[in-house]
Length: 166
Image 1 (cartoon, helix red, strand yellow):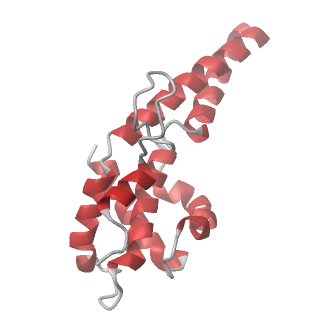
Image 2 (cartoon, helix red, strand yellow; image 1 turned 120 degrees about the horizontal axis):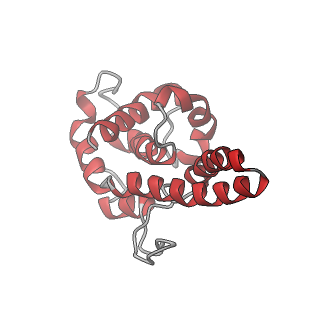
């Protein structure tokens, strides 16, 4: 049995302390409202604003950052991390990459990482961000002993599941 409860997993993905910056509602996903979504929106807004000159670039970047942040938040809030954890706890052994002698505790951080990463990089494919995920895995792995070479499969699986369930 895992040492991490569904509640702890849910809190790791979406916390009550975290509030939506616009509505103040609890549970806004920290990754979904994060810098990645905002920067992507800012870049798009700045590019669109450039057509009308330097002032348009600044205004476009600000509007794009807000829209990008909201889009990322929408992606994050459409995912139920507790449901995802439950699914993987019940199904991980059936996956071709799962070593039958390896406990769920070892794979659990990789599944959570895949879900969180999907919300961090909305609109991107797993393969597009694989190098970044590999680089950041050690900071996200918790007590898992899986190297990225093994964790990657579980993270990719979780990413694919949430991307097709939307």
